Image 1: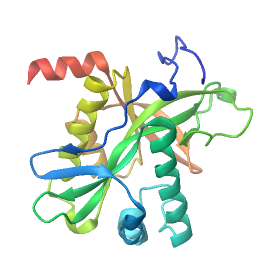
Image 2 (image 1 turned 30 degrees about the vertical axis):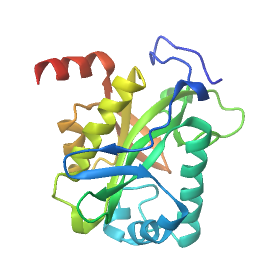
Image 3 (image 1 turned 45 degrees about the vertical axis):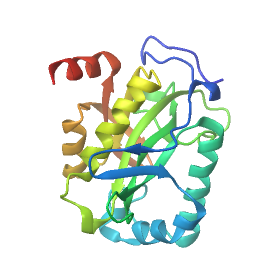
Image 4 (image 1 turned 90 degrees about the horizontal axis):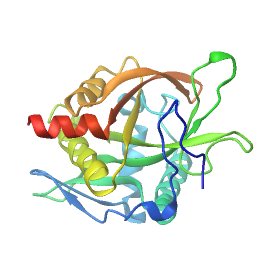
Length: 222
């Protein structure tokens, strides 16, 4: 078990048994399913596009080896945390168009000198000995040829609702590069609001978040 609830962050502890893994999810136009080893080449192409990679991780295309490591992290997260990004495909053709999902974060609990907290993705991602609290990140990445179709918003809303309604999460958060206006627009559409600065991958990111009470208000107002 990780850090207990803190007044500053308002988190509860996360246990492996907190989550029942999502096998599949559908939206009007899209389907989401767990990644498989056969999806590796799609992820290689997605991560190799400089325009896609610009706002993800270190901001540069990932090598095949780095993509393999990412896929292994995702598959491990399915087993250990019943969480992880899902493959997004077009319901009509089955073609993969991106990824979207909920990921376990390890967040630095006591940053030194008033610095923004460091974020680390996946269980065990933080340096050994660092006191961390767990959060759940809502993330989404799509192939460039499918930008502007509303797919990210469609999937993010579905994952948001699943997280709050089915998993009973108290909060969702996203780390977004300040220059990534499109991603911030998606976050705004699904109800996440700017709440501060975090650091990750040696860079500064904006934190956007939505609480369960705020989500209830959105649902009731719809």
